Image 1: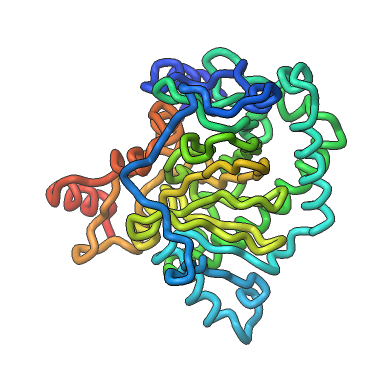
Image 2 (image 1 turned 30 degrees about the horizontal axis):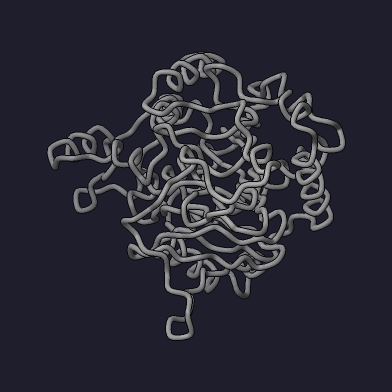
Length: 380
């Protein structure tokens, strides 16, 4: 097993040699819009012509994202019925809104305030945290195939703690760093409880899941999507599924823009105030052997308002192995995905362009013979 520190260099080299152009740490959309503009620059034009948006009109009521009440999950009297709702949400939607989650509202409000304050800093202050050459952490704008997203991101690996870049998290102002640290600890605890309920819903060994995710590989991404003069031409974040186990998303300023792809149609999501949005990532689809689905989603732009969000990504520890949970595999239910070490999974994920569910496709088993061989190697 490699030293986890070596993952930095491996992923940096992968990013530098990947099909994407990596991250451009100089270009900032927030700086771009300081000058009056009526049209989107050509290098920001990205149009999804293959999949229509859901028609918003009285004849087509908007589908509603499932809501899970965490209090009902932990209550003895209501746990069974809420657990079934959780199971169904992960199977049918891959997304749900979590209410009564127990994360301190005062802490969330404090953090939201500090994130807004960070994006209001002069550009020269934000430049201290920009993405460095051959790296992928820090403040910058994603550039793929020569096209830029309409958003400024700040991405950091936050766990294990020793993997934090010394010029990023430790150098944040204490007024920002301290509530962010507290928030991450709260989400770590919440994530482990959610994963425990997911294990129960899948009827798999809880200990196996806990050992994989305890003190696991975690990261955070804060994104500001500024107002866009031509929202029909630009995209805040292109269609993709998350490579994590689960993602926990918080809406910072109450402006919608997240869309979920269901049955080939993009459905706009309406956030419940103070709720957290949880979605199934590729790793959880692999662990569940396809029972749960990681779902494509994207972020649209708004002509008048900025949207700010903060996403927390929860993955297994780097020493873990990613593959279908052994108790779900049988001769009648062969594995659908290959097994690989978490460290290799990260390297492979960061070396590819983020597009739809293309990375998950590389993990799929293509032949019955390969599935049979993998099943036999598990010695179930």
